[in-house]
Image 1: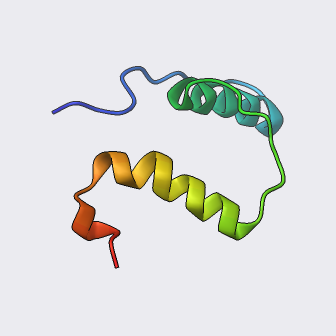
Image 2: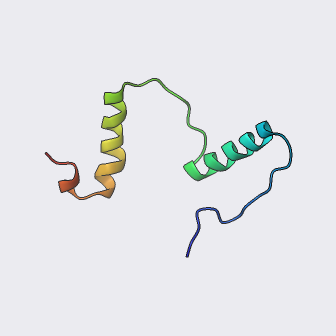
Length: 64
């Protein structure tokens, strides 16, 4: 069975150091840093539907 954490690393130090290490791991999993941007809920959900759902689901999942 495959795991999403192929390699575990122990972080020694303070909480802030562990949080920074976690950020690095999550960025690698997500494909790098994404600049934060302000968008409305409508814009976000439209983008999500067009770029993530429609590519990976059958049309009956999102068609009204």
